[in-house]
Amino acid sequence: MQGNYERIVEKIAKAANLDKEEIEKRIEAKRNKLSGFISKEGAAQVVASELGISFEHDKLKIGELLPGMRKVNMIGKVISISPVRTFKTKKGDESKVVNLFMADDSSNIMAVLWDTNHVALVEKGEIKEGSVIEISNATMRDNELHLGNFSEIKNSDENLGEVITNKVVREKKILDFRKGENVGTRAFIVQFFEPRFFNVCPECSRKIEQEGEVFVCKTHEKVIPEKRAVVTFVLDDGTGTIRAVLFQEALGSLGLTELENPEKLLAQKQSILGKEMFFSGSIRNNVFFNNLELIVDEAKEIDIDGVISNLEDK
Image (tube, rainbow, N blue to C red; front, side):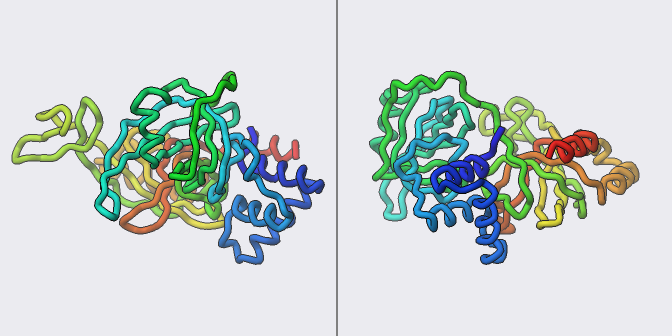
């Protein structure tokens, strides 16, 4: 499946009547000029602008949306809707926000509705799960589609057929990681930190608080705690490094099974330090350290035969 970047390169090439290779050369030249401080997707938008190409009036597929795009027009199917949340604005006024998980036949995305008139459409059931909706004049922020006062949203009669609801993972270099993306990358484990443990509710797996000798879940009240672990380590792929976080459910994929046995854990750590693997997960911003980190869903051994086969195909 093509990634967002590849789709946009094709669109630019077609609109400019140039080869894809020429467009990619211009994109790489733009990145080099800016010392690599701009992503491939961002450089593609700059190149498109320099060529006089605008996507403002096009209806784009979700798979064609890039961070930073403005005046986005698209059609998608509502797969799920979050509860409406109420919050206070900086001026102290009360407002509402709701998230729509949307999909089409190219990918899926979270759309965030900030305008109270748009939120009201959800509250009144005019936009609901299964609705096909048309969005105009939206903005891409951190791989989410945001709708403000000047955006429009309405039901559409278009039949989208089968849509992609599974998480879409894009293989990328660490240098090109952006907040909110679901990514996959080949990287070496270069540093490993000691595991940390915490207690969760056995019913909902949410973190619980200890009150004296009793553990309390906000939803299920008094519970018998379930112990969970989290491990952090540092990945390096040659383009950059990133802190990676692996929770209990995914520890087995890294071969970590003896977290509470110091001697056996040391042996397992030594066996994976310096090892190259394929990691997939989501990128989020760590507020405490103020940098990006990878929340790992899965770590897999490198399929050498597959890598060789792909190289031969190229």
